[in-house]
Length: 161
Length: 211
Image 1 (cartoon, each protein chain N blue to C red):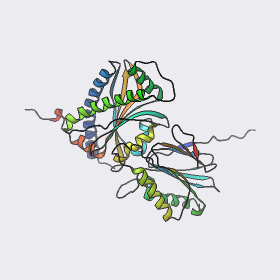
Image 2: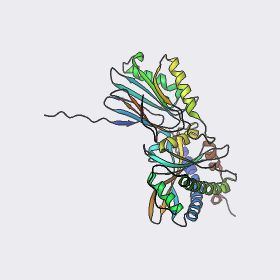
Image 3: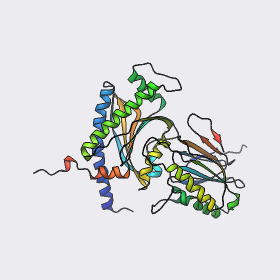
Image 4: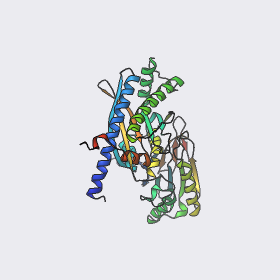
């Protein structure tokens, strides 16, 4: 009798969304000026990705994962509910490009990066890796089997952080 | 949850914007037809208000790399026009415009990029000329720029200014035709909140009372 093995699912994390997944599944997002905050618990092979759109919530409505100033505590709460200690999490960050530098379009990428940095510092968390800024979009994939975050930029070799 | 009155008002607003874009697309189509010697025309595909987290999916922009020409409104109101193709279709347009055989090299030549940017310029100006007449304002598109990147990344940046104001975003999408065949090209118009309000407040001739 052969055992049926499940093939890994690739879960797309859309703008403002946050998803959790366990090994062997993967979490993926396409980023421009948005940033992806990923947290990974190696012992349980549990990963989370938030696709953050704006730096500050202010009076705006929407899920915490939409806003850089709310996303970190919200993700930590979710891990706590799942019994995961904060100090066992591996945190990574990617995105925050400024793609329309020739235009007047607002440059939120830098603000998103700075706000996530500040939120992580406030929680006493250190980044294990980041791939941020620039002028190109990114496709990021968190492999929940390994915790590796693969960053693909058009015309360049993928980078694993 | 929205009341029936709110829903009805939103539908009416969308219908107004649809009328405006039907007019603008008609003008852009005429310009495109002249530019391509009658080969290519376009028509309005959809004017939709969608939740931010669904916008990329609604437009069918996966993780495909696209060739795009982007214009932004060179005005305090902001807004973006994105002309996008997959690699093959972008090359086909360049070949058509330059009267040259289809290029298959990996790098786009300056001439090919220029041909696509000029197409974006012609379409952007035609759109804005039509819109300017209705909104009584001189909106001018920026010089076009050429990008090869993930379509979703570029759209994400274009949506930012609407995302600041609303969890739902307005998208206007156009499709292209070559004779009877629909082409896999799109123009996506992404207004800012301010530009959207300008559209909404615009007076349409059909709503003027006549006596």
